Image (cartoon, rainbow, N blue to C red):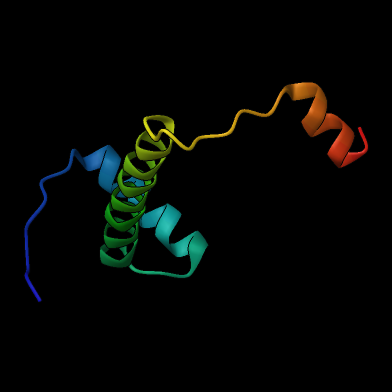
Amino acid sequence: MSVTTVRLQDDTMAWAKEYADFKGMSVTGLIAGLIEEARQDDEDYADAIKVINSENREYVSAEEIKTKLGL
């Protein structure tokens, strides 16, 4: 496991501490979670682009989706 240092403005650090306390976690856990969430978002985006560029993609209209959902 790696260790890193992050420099934050005092007001940003105060907010991070307050937010982490509210969530019941440490600031380190908060930052690590945000990085992991960004990583997952990036992987999801890459997967979506693969589907969009796939030759086997299937398009469904908004009306079909509404019908399937009973809206």
